[in-house]
Length: 420
Image 1 (cartoon, helix red, strand yellow):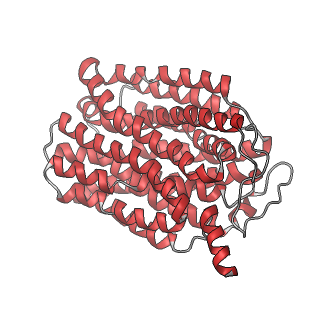
Image 2 (spheres, helix red, strand yellow):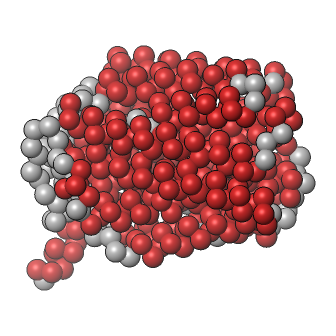
């Protein structure tokens, strides 16, 4: 393990702040459509299936871009230029949604937006994993991926987006999204380094991890031969179904099925954002101590209850409180999509592994999941989407039992107990 130095620690904190903003604004843009759906529907008359397709097409291009960018980054040995380009482009393409004149225009804008955004997470988490102390790796990666998306995408977005839509219209709201991305890209260009100072030693790995790092990156087939990578990929498919289905259809469910006013709907969705921030860092931080596997299984059991609460709880205050308690899945996302792979594969395969896990998960859960849920909702009502989301979480619990533990503290405890 590389010794901690003041310079390395300062850079770790600065990098966390910048990447927190970068990925947070990615999700601000991604979630804006769900919160604007009631307003867009007044102009375009979207069906549930079309709403699912708008989420699905972004997930499709996000997935392809993530896999391509991860592989390209490992081959080039560079993250920063790809990250800057992705942040600039997703801001530009997000604002292009305002120019749409119908469903097909929105579909094209969302596809372009996903193609840019898909590169952000593999680059950001690769940089963060390399700059983090082992004792803070789960916490840092959880703040970056979970809490940032929760704060900006789950708390700020529903309040700001609905207020802007009511004040200036949904088209102007999309135009506003270009500003934060340009600012964040400039800060990344100024302050982010390709290699962190004072972290010369490789990431700690689980005992089964291979540390060979040939030039040009490790072949994808070798990455996919790793048990943890394959299980995390399958978990991603199920968990993306849980997440994208909830976030896509809950606003419409609350306004159409439960009759909530837009302001009440916004308040309930903000509770999801509060939970997103809370569990986004708490779940990975707890996993630093108890282990990745038990944390993933336990918090996913709570996550399975969240879409059921949407269906069966009618009072908005009670529903909001239950959402804060049960919307734990976004903290789990960091574990299977970033931290476990980072502790499993060598550096030369890190961005590839993150890109493949995210990409396959987005293809199956983010692209196909909401389209199937939208079709099912048109056939049997919107509650069908919530049951599909709950089923995805139950499958995650079963898959997680096959993971090999990677948390450094848990691995050391297991080794000590074996010796004793």
